[in-house]
Length: 136
Image 1 (cartoon, rainbow, N blue to C red):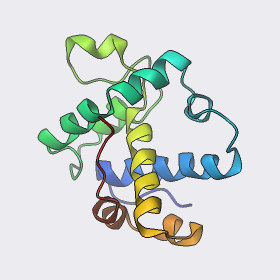
Image 2 (cartoon, rainbow, N blue to C red; image 1 turned 30 degrees about the vertical axis):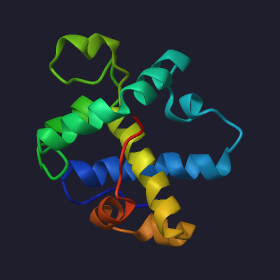
Image 3 (cartoon, rainbow, N blue to C red; image 1 turned 90 degrees about the horizontal axis):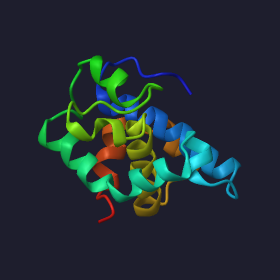
Image 4 (cartoon, one colour; image 1 turned 90 degrees about the vertical axis):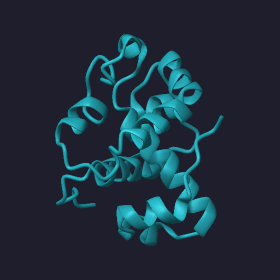
């Protein structure tokens, strides 16, 4: 699966989401925390705060941004994700991976696409057709 050629944050989130989605298929019995490299507390935080993370991305119009700093803040391994808020130290790193995977799961559920279609689908198509809504 080739890395995105664009710098768009959404494309990179979807790319990492596809990798986690493949892990879902190959390792269905393995917990999501192990697939992403989180502790049980970190995956719990991601699940409990999924809606707030998504709202942060949307309200600040980050999804279609070409700012490469977003990748280091939300996609790369680090001690935590960087929202530049007081809660940063409580957050797990790589929250963009987590959100990307949730979007892929909803895309699969809504479209019934097979694996080849999922892997080849452009990020914007996945975004639009998933009609992604975080759990509340």
